[in-house]
Length: 170
Image (cartoon, rainbow, N blue to C red; front, side):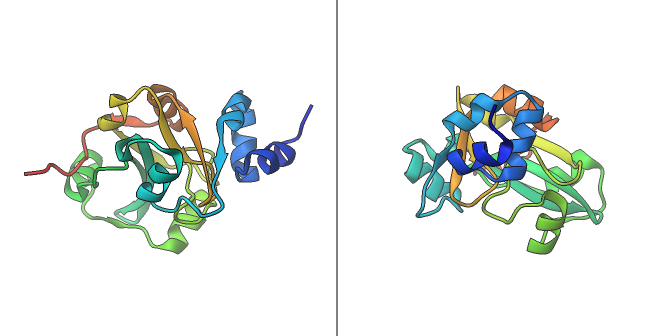
């Protein structure tokens, strides 16, 4: 049997994320992970590297709601409507988290935050737009590695509430 460190090394995933996948019984996800030396820090970079639609990228974005971190999972072609997040959470104020809060909360750097497998348990909101695809691609804990997953499985494993927090285009 391989270790999480060996699995992570082979897939390019972060060892903490590989361990989280093993704990969830999702070792097969690592087999589908793809590493891109040029990086997949942004949704556009990830979509270009994978060869998929921008909306098939799942962005993992951390916000601070009245100071408490919250993770929002959003499709790569959309923006988060912070006011809708505030209303969904019943918070007084919602702002983007800074790099320090992102790393402290998740254990990962911006550009590589996966949708689950974080250092601390955080409230998670997933925008319904992710369900429009059979497969989405998300960061595997590094800014160079992504993995494919069925959207409903992603939402379930992230422990996310399905919401509508996408910025509406005019």
